[in-house]
Every structure is written in structure tokens, then in C-alpha cells.
Length: 181
Image 1 (cartoon, helix red, strand yellow):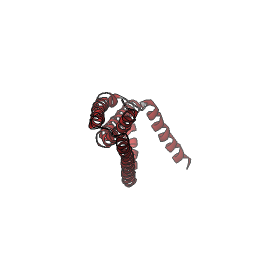
Image 2: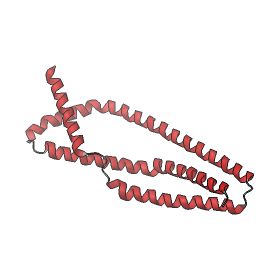
Image 3: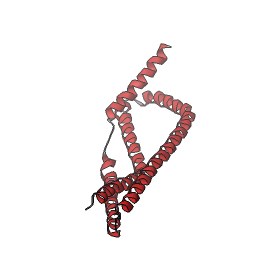
Image 4: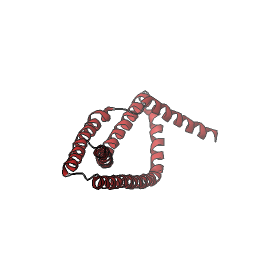
């Protein structure tokens, strides 16, 4: 095999995989990752409420519920602003990612076209490059999808005890601060 075909095949695979992974992340993976994070947060909160607040009597829980509800009501406007900030940042990130992938694909296309003309490739080489890229894309697509839906969803990336400790520390810090005033 000619070295020009070998290197073009690598360049094309990089471009195709970059495009696929970008589209896959912003369509399929981001939704699945959002569900994974929500499940982890719910797990941590259930653990926190069940283990930390569970032993408390209802009369002890009531003031905590009232304080939390007041804080959440007060934070609603801040949360709307934060949601808008997140949406704007995500839109910028999507644009930047597709700009990057567009540049990579354009550079690879130009290099491949130049190499094809310079080395006078025949149609057999072009068919090889195209079929190789499609086969690689299919296998990577299947692997990414199976990994995301079968393995990644069961992985807990956060330590529930560390989060609970942080929440308790924050609650205690806030109580100390209020009592000192």
C-alpha cells in the first residue's frame, strides 16, 4: 500500500471520528449523561435525607424543612439566572465544538484531495478510503452507544459520603455564622 493512502486513511478516520463523537455527544450522550447526573444526585440526596435526617423526630425535621423551603423560594430567581447562564455557556460550547470539527474536516478534505491529485490515486484507493471510514464509524458508533447505555449509566463518579459531609459542613457553617451575628 502506498504511504499516501496509509496517512490519508488515518487523517480521514480522525476527521470522521471527530465529527461522529461531536454529534454523538451533543445529541445522544449529553441527554444520557444528564440522566446519569440526576440519578446520582437523587441517590446522594436520598442517602443524605435517609441517613442524616432520618433519625430526627418530626418536630426536629420541621424547622429544617421550613428553612430549606425559604432558602429555595429565595433562590428561585438566582436559579433562573443560573439556568440562563448555563444555557448560554452550553450554546457557546456547541458552536466552538462544531467550529473546531468543521476546521478539522476541511483541513483533512483539502489534504486528501491534494494527495489524491498529487499521487494520482485511482478509484480503488478512493473506495478503500471511503469503505474503511464507514466501517470504522460503524464499529466506533456501536461501541460508544453500548458503553454509554450499558456501562457508564451504572458508574457513580461521586462519593456520597463526601457530598453528605460537605452539605453538613455547609449547614453547620451557616448556623455558626448566623449565631455569631
